[in-house]
Length: 327
Image 1 (tube, rainbow, N blue to C red):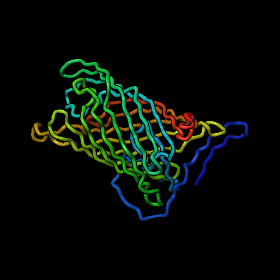
Image 2: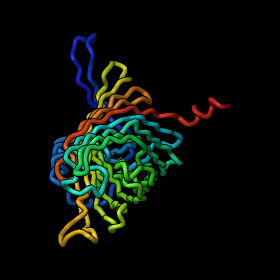
Image 3: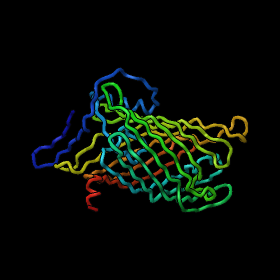
């Protein structure tokens, strides 16, 4: 395990310290290859200037969408409260190109919970209220109400090795809670599954999620099966005070969906046009079990937002201390 620190003398001045992640190294294995995107190459290329090292840790990487392969530690419960704004995101899914003139989408408050079910399994649940203010070919709409709820499970499969990433699987469903006629969601049941990979390269964490999204069309015009991906990087935490109680970490990702299928009633060559990808960057400020996060995003094409902003707070509880309050 490596430690780095930059000090400014005299001794009475503050120092900035990069705090390393905990070491979870396992016996080495032969390397495997994946086909990275251009941003993946840039992220990995930046990290390769540092010495190779193999460590992994489980964390909630909000405001990013990418997931770590590891689950949160056993006996912990993470809760989050946040909000997001997206401009011209073409929401919800199956909204055709040209239907929206402009759209201001606010999700908030956003509620989320993650609970460790032992050392290898993590249960995740999330729900939000949505305000959709938009101008479409049907006129101007401004609706506020329930969004769709989501329930997922993450399983930690294998630890990180010298040449192989830590690996996991995440799967789950989106439940039909939104009002489709008010354009607050699709009000359908959708299914998702991802392979998760996490690797330390030097002091940086690199995460890769690859998966499938099975989206039910609320009009009954066929199902859209999409390939989903997320490639993210997390910088090492920087200690902001002498004791290292306050830390700051920078985050970056590219994520999206592609492979949208033709609809049964669309013209030849027509598609549902659910493809879209975006770049998202952000920061986390952590003190003990409290994490404040904020981020910005920019869409690269199609159904992704033109730009967006997001922020919130996460608090990690130790279940044993929480249950002791009721003893």
